[in-house]
Picture (cartoon, protein in one colour):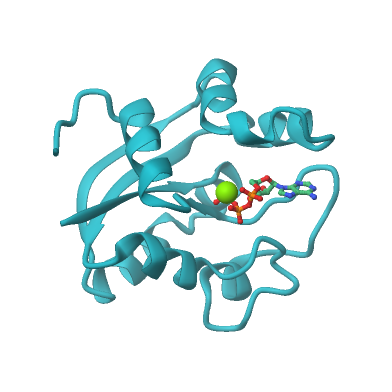
Length: 141
Ligand code: ATP
Ligand code: MG
């Protein structure tokens, strides 16, 4: 079975959208295999977003992601990595299609911190790396 890492980002947690997002994951047929509410450290977020460390928006991204608690979830399902990326919609909530999580729940694109409700791993390699970072206590494979 395939696994992905979902983050319900601090804006969504603060707005009380956790239940709505978990509902969408469950009614899609995916299963929740790990779940925690956590205030992420800058060290963890730097490791998580290491591919973006030289981007101009990186400091603002860390400020956003460490601004409050978030919910980290390991989700299991057939082709769940690609499937959850489809459910999220594109990065910019203004352009994300209606019906997607970002399209339905995300607010307008604001720089420097783009607040877009959720994260989902973008490949099997990323999913393995991210699950190990956020859930070192879980052993799946
Ligand atoms: P995520 O990795 O969080 O699932 P994503 O894969 O859609 O989102 P990435 O390109 O990996 O998007 O960017 C990671 C995060 O950095 C985005 O979700 C967003 O919060 C922020 N971000 C991306 N591009 C920009 C930008 N041009 N300006 C400001 N913030 C950005
Ligand atoms: Mg990404």
